Every structure is written in C-alpha cells, then in structure tokens.
Image (cartoon, rainbow, N blue to C red; front, side, top):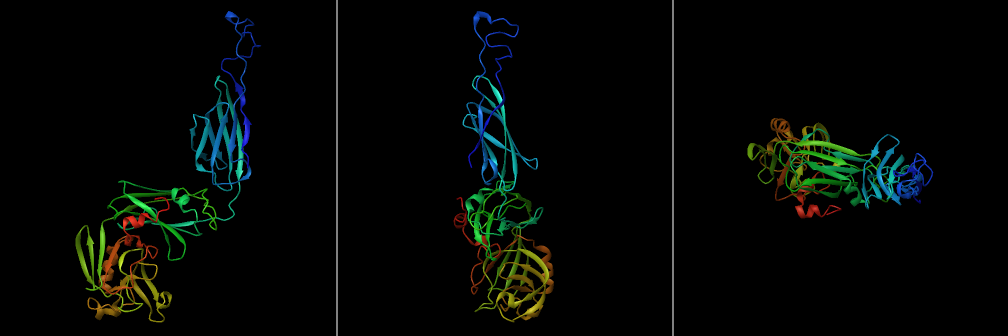
Length: 394
C-alpha cells in the first residue's frame, strides 16, 4: 500500500509577518528598501504503513520531504506511544517496535524547512487483524527461585518458521552479565521451543529477567502472529548438584561443593527399555504423590501405582522418587523401570532439599542414551559451541 503524503499544516515563517509583501507591520518599507521574504512552501510528510487493514509487523516510518522532522508522536488506540528515533539527518523517523495486528494508530509530525518555516502534519492508519495467533508458554514462572541449571524456556503453540526474527525479540538480562545463548530444540511434545542457557551453571544469587517483545511479530508459514509480549523475572538459588552413579547405586547431594548426604538408590533395569537415561537432567517439577502408569511410557502393564515424593527429570517419564517396593535392591542393584528410586525416608528428606532447576548428573555403563535437549532440559548435554549453533542468529 502506498504511503500517505501530507502537506504540513499551519506552515509559517519566523521572518514573516501578516503585513503585505514589501512592507513592515507599521506600513513602512524596510530600511535599505529590502522587501521581507515571501512564505516558503511547507514540507510534506509520508507515513507507512497507511490506510485501513494495512499489513502489521513493520515499524512505523515517517519521512519529511523538503524539510526535517522536529518531533514525531505515534499513539495507538489504547493510548500507548511508540518510541522511535530520527535518522538521515532528521528527515526520517522510525519506530523501535512494529505495528501490531488489529490496532489503529495516529501520527503527528512537526516539520521545519531550511528557511525556518514550521508546520505540523497528522495521519491515521489501522492494521489488519491476525488471521492466526501464536501463543507461548514459558519457564520458569515469575518470582521463582530456581537451581543453577534452569534454562529460560519458551514453547510455542504453532510452528515458528521465522526463528531468527522471533529470537531477535527475546532479551535476557542478568544482574552479573552472565554469558549465555538461545538455542532452538524440538520439544518432547513435537512443538518448536527455544531455550536460553548460560555457558556454565548459573552463579547463585543471579537475578534474571526475560523480556519477550513478540507483539507484532510474524511466526512465519503456519504459525500466525504474536499479539502480546511476555516477561518473567526469577532468581538463582544455592549451587546444588545431584550426582547419580548408577553403577555404584548411589545418589549424592552436593551443595556449594560440599557433600550433604549420600543415598542408596536403584536405577533402571539393565539390558532393555527399562534402563535409565544418563547425562545431565534438570529437575523440572516436584510433583509429590502421583499415579505412575507404565502404559503411558510404552512399557505395557508393568506397573500402575501411586508414588510418593515424585520429582520429574524428563518428559519421557524419568523421575527420582520413593520406591519402598524395591527396598532389597536399593544401593545393591538397578531394578527399576527407568527411574531413580530410594527409601521413603530418604525420598522425603531429599524432596525437601532440592529445587526445580537443580542438575542431576547421571552416569552409568548400561543406559539407554543421553538425555536429549528437548526431553526436559537436556541442553547441558551439548558442548557450549554445539549449543550456540542452535541459535538462529549466531
């Protein structure tokens, strides 16, 4: 759609008056017989987008022709003002944010010509509504205190083809300039997901803020538009690392480099689908007492029971939890269906100690592989260079 071209309104010259050309205000000619200057043509202004049902997802651009812009105000129908900046020696103003779908905007621009003339121009336009809307779910929640391995994670309802454009709108700030990177993964649910993890585990006490300024961003083919922004702020708690040695059947809680407690455990049964995962898993949720049904994880009718002190480690169903039915194997052999089981007493104590975001560093000779990035928060199983390769911008 072509830009709207507007003549500046109320043009004036600071060197002119209302007297007839060639005379001063008191009817006399100027000294030396020089006539006062005639009024110059006012500057014109163009605005894009323009008209009704204009395409969203572009910044608002205001351009002066035959003069410069001295001020620009762009306000939407909810009273919010778009910030922007001048460029091209004051002839162009561009908004910092994009025009969003289904909104109306009013533009007011003040201009000045080279010979001192001033003017004002106004314009209005509206954008088309989003035919399809993309939404996102994010972790961790606002105000949470989490462990040192917790990533910032966003899962999208619809596909994201414009990954680079979406990633540009995501801003993570920290209280201590933590180095980190976004990386795109396929979530266990099959949806697009992007996580931000530090180069190494977070420093305890770090304050982290996510600002996802997605409103007005197009996801690309099949994804639709984002029509709102998202934000969250959270804090990193104590440095706690859970070391799980499946070969020795031991779990060790290490806090700030000191061993707090060692617990006898039983991991997944060797030699088949009941084996545990290895690598670094991150505690995703403390779910308490839940029903565990083997049919939901592809293990037939092996079990269907209520399980206490359940702590989720992967989307595929690996937990740490109380396993009193496996008492004779705790600390002796791996005979679970893939989880890390312990006694009721140890599980109750351990459940109170750990927090979401704590890393579980799991090793063992006979496992079914390393936790994938999308199976929970398995990003830590990639080297830093490999993780950065998953950014759409790096």
